[in-house]
Length: 197
Image 1 (cartoon, one colour):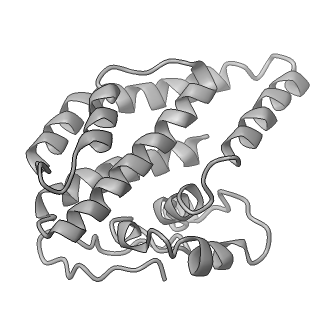
Image 2 (tube, rainbow, N blue to C red; image 1 turned 180 degrees about the vertical axis):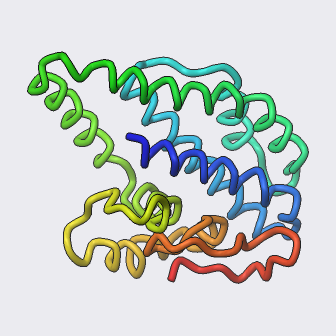
């Protein structure tokens, strides 16, 4: 769970740091798809867990869903993130403590709930969630980790097949498909050429 939360925070940071540098119409279109994909993933994650939203998240959903290249405003995205980030971070931290407090309870029942959540999560668009999650994970964090656990060749299939449709949006991810951190595509000195490879 902590690895998923780290990916969520990396995504939020990536959106915040690049928003004001996205200027060209196609880049804005790709960026807004990235924002919407990230918001949908985080929202689905939390709906599955607790069926509630935390303050301010609705604004990001609305902006990511209703904005177009014409009315894109980086300041709106950054302001919304500044408003919601403290409660979002607190929520993610508190959730880990809540999960740890469940240790004394029936492990089999908790595992059943977890497996249900994983099954629901795997029903999401394979051309959106897997490429995005692979580009949000950092395998170098804390000495490396194997999250998410994938069958052999899965990352390769995701990177070279599933990520293709929305490859313009995956330029904004902070890591490549293999979980290696990379410079953000948009920002001071960004070359705007990041790929999933």
